[in-house]
Length: 231
Image 1 (cartoon, rainbow, N blue to C red):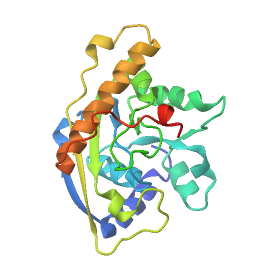
Image 2 (cartoon, one colour):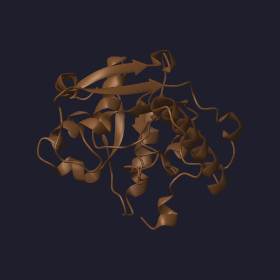
Image 3 (cartoon, rainbow, N blue to C red):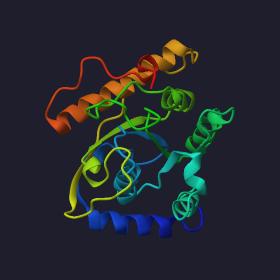
Image 4 (cartoon, one colour):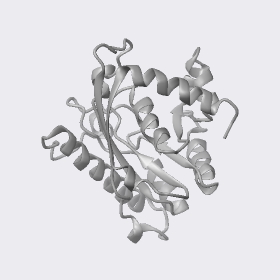
């Protein structure tokens, strides 16, 4: 654990406690030991805090793959560095280094957290969209379990692309961890585009079903695809 991790985590946890009513479920599905990959849907910039809060309170020290710009921001930059997070240099030749770093952490028995969509959902109604293959690559290359963690409600605290928090009154945020996603038939296969896409689609389909349960309504039959929409 890097120096400053627990201090930064306690600071964020204290701030989150003043703003969020916790509605947490499924901790029994989190592995009792060993590395694992936790994946979640992504609606708002507040998601990493509620996601990490859930895992940290259940005894894990999660590492996120976070966009590199965060590491140079005042205050936030100090926090993500103290928490030993992994920078992602989007749109550059160094982008894949984040996946390699994540694999290295997993091989050392750590918990890696990732939003498989790679960015905030572009779906107009905030449903999970088509994911990117980085999470699947890390899971299949290392063999670690993939734990889906669906969440809903953080968007009431901070809207999508929002910059102003709405902490009063405290917002109910529901976070649910589900059983590990079954990827056993794909493990050991060459990591072709088809294999990675199949694993990614299973991850996103699982998260979508869980979000449907949280919202009490069906998701679109066809998930939003940034590549096809030109977003």
